[in-house]
Length: 111
Image (cartoon, rainbow, N blue to C red; front, side):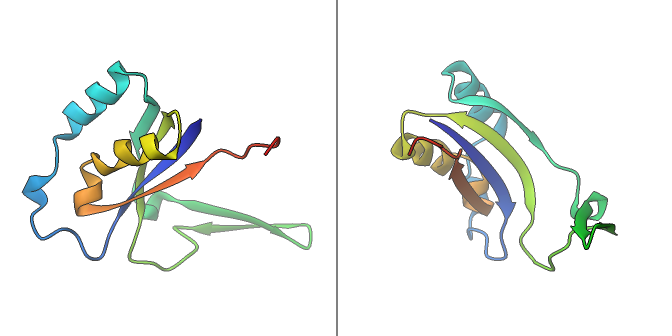
């Protein structure tokens, strides 16, 4: 199963972020075993453009649309046998210690 893993900041990080694993090691291990298909960091929210169409009119906004203290800072595309495996991958990511990780399976039209 494919999962999109959102890597997010958090307003309440772990009290000891030095306990977090090294990101280069995490990436190398996940790439080597085929669990991570791709991933990258994102530019800050100030670089975002929000696109909406209302009443046939294109509306563009600079920056994020929602006001929030939590921000998506990166993503990884995972290939895992099931949700349990995806959770194991996510729990070992450094941002699980200093931020939060959201796992979302891709839509299955046959389910």
